Image (cartoon, rainbow, N blue to C red):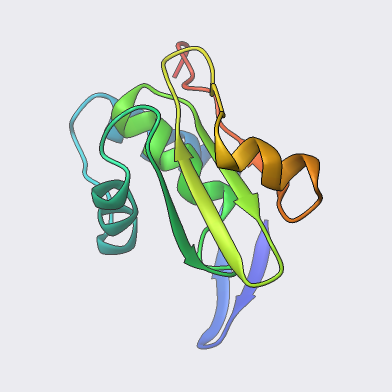
Length: 118
């Protein structure tokens, strides 16, 4: 896959991401500064936190899952992202987030599954 960054062209592949996720899962690598910050705001299951809109990517939640072995959900509203830290096998979203989802103020962008086969 070729993607364009502000500084030029970035070459990457699905295999390189798989290797990175495996390294994090096995404890041979760590999260970058941004992902450590995200995790610091939702360190335990069933916690959630608001972030500025478009500040979290699907790739971010994949790396958080590799690190913790838990699922994560990315919810997005008009002006914010919500990161939800789930459990090993599911995200049990409840409380005010459910109402915001039902009323259309938030939408589910993605959720991650910790890969047992990585």
